[in-house]
Image (cartoon, rainbow, N blue to C red; front, side, top):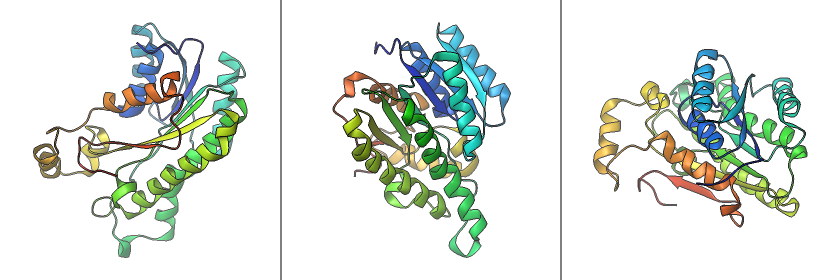
Length: 251
């Protein structure tokens, strides 16, 4: 097993689906984890229980990652609980919000989607980097939508995730001389509440029947890669945007 003992990790949106899997697996690997949630405290408590059951150590912190004050408070809670250094940041907060075509979108909707996906990543990165030392790792959750433009009505989400992809490359260049790595994941069809809400069953079945691996992905498939990218086993990997889609798309 990957050993992250002595490492401090922050996972934004860390209480369900991919975020929950990342929080649990980082804790299982030995990291002390700061698990962020926005509004669903019950989901946060379930995640904390799973971490405790796995023998891990974590704290649960409420906060809206689109607001600088909340991001700063999250970092302050990490420092208070675990010390001034933060070694791993997983920027998982994001979402589609709604499927809207160009004619249906207004500026407020566009700004909401961009803020949720890109601004949250920027704010957390900016707040955490001053606490990072050489060997630290940032992993951003982008999306296949950022690669291929997304499905119907997801233009705002696709452009926001495309920005996350580009931001990850920019941070790899900027932070590399400090020994800080930055990578991103680009998940495809992962079996999560995201797709329960926004993707018809017929589309999900079609993906299962046509992708080379003949299944939807699992949150744990993403978390496995996050743990790898957080560890020294990926010490020469930075600026990568890694596709996790069962062969649905090749970049």
